[in-house]
Length: 174
Image (tube, rainbow, N blue to C red):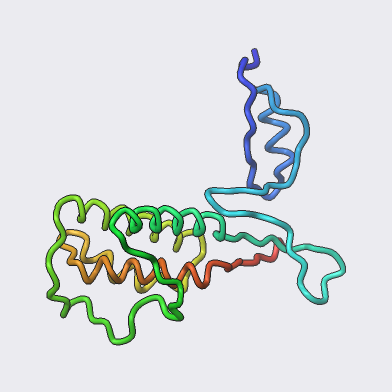
């Protein structure tokens, strides 16, 4: 028989209606089918490019996830009397060399926070923000013994994202 719970599945497939119809045979679904609007932290919508008679592309944006991540970082910095600068035009400070950073090592709590921020930034990269990929990867390699300077560079990346939070990747559905 059918399950008692009402579920709202998302089908990302070449033939989503076929997938949904088969799921409806096993589960009680909410009424109707609709194009997706959110998926794994991204906002999804049909995209219209110049020359298209009608929207035939899909775009996904990590903007909402990035905004929330920035708000969380700003709230944490505020607890320590610091602010996140949003004027950065590059993901890291020019000429910064993390291997030459001799600032103080972070404490255990600082290391945990550093690793949390790395995880958030790595997910933002997975959501399509390729502009920070190299910087996040580079700073990830210092997760075992991060220094204060490395943490400050993570804040710099968040400051860059604060200034440059809007980015969308557009896919051709064909």
